[in-house]
Amino acid sequence: MTNRLLRIVAFSWLAFVVALLPTRLAAAAEIRVLCSNGIKPVVEELIPEFERGANHKVNITYGVSATLARQIEAGEPFDVAILTASLIDEAVDRHRIQRGSRTVLARSAMALGIRSGARKPGIQTIEALRKALLNATTIAYAREGASAPFVADAPARGWR
Image (cartoon, rainbow, N blue to C red; front, side, top):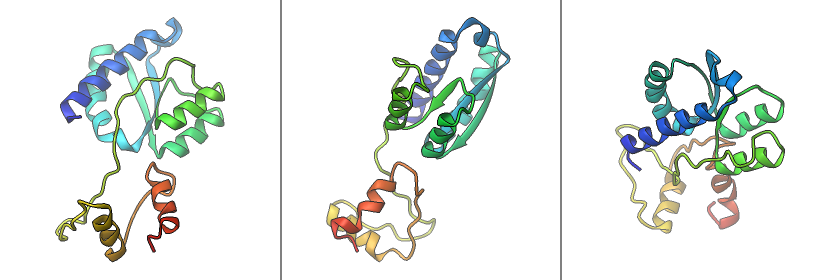
């Protein structure tokens, strides 16, 4: 999905959510959003435009989806949550998010970033990716991020 298309979808989605808010919230000066870091760049670009058009102030808390889900479970007040689909589903099952309100905003496959100036490894095959990861001097990932299960299961797959 292109950045422009994602912006259009996100803006439309946020406007739709605000339109569905109960009247007392729709008239509120502030909308509280809990937002996964994965979509932060798009949201940061989108929010000023939304605030101008909707006459609402948006207060956003960014973080790892798992941390935000724990905040929701603990009773953190929010109007909109942008998390991974599985965490939204869990919050719906626990009656923390209204059933039927889940909307797919974006889908993202696993991503790999290389330090600026470093040689880009070949990762066209699983074996090439395996070698690139095994040869890396450092690997950074969010312990509770969407990639965590993949990284945590790597030794079980023989990636040692």
